[in-house]
Image (cartoon, rainbow, N blue to C red; front, side, top):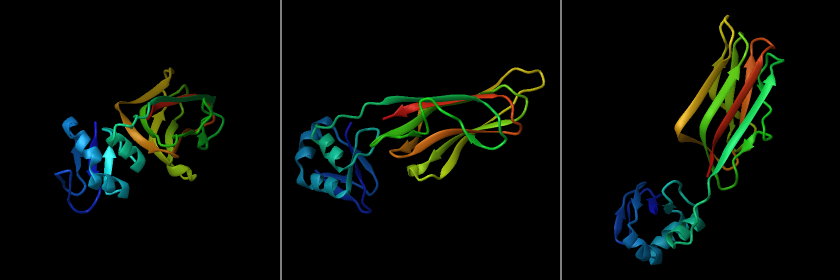
Length: 199
């Protein structure tokens, strides 16, 4: 798919097509050749007024022109999965040691979408497991999701899954993600994991 966004504050007509400010236009296959050779279209993309989109993501100047001229290869998606398990020995919020070694950092030119966040705990005391994000990798962590866990007097194990049928876009290149846990008493075993797609 080839789409172009008018990223300007006014309407523009490119290759004979009027596109209002902030709107996308989906090119038809019969238009590809004409648009790829139109100097005004190429200039708009080069200046950032026109932004090409591959059907999923807005592209930078170079990738946008490559898409328009059929040189663009859409990045391959990679499955991301991190997990960890530990015995709780503290009452303060603590990073869960992850495998592979965390925190997870979104790769250059990539986007991360979450599909699953799960945690389990085997003690009757309350436990809070959090999925956190550091936007841009600057060291400031924000809680995105909290899973409250505990089990009743009958025993067993408390497990809470959070799943998204449609992956939830949460991060771009340089963003970091981790899992923390915080209990009210130093006891019990916590297990947690998250998975998603990097594309």
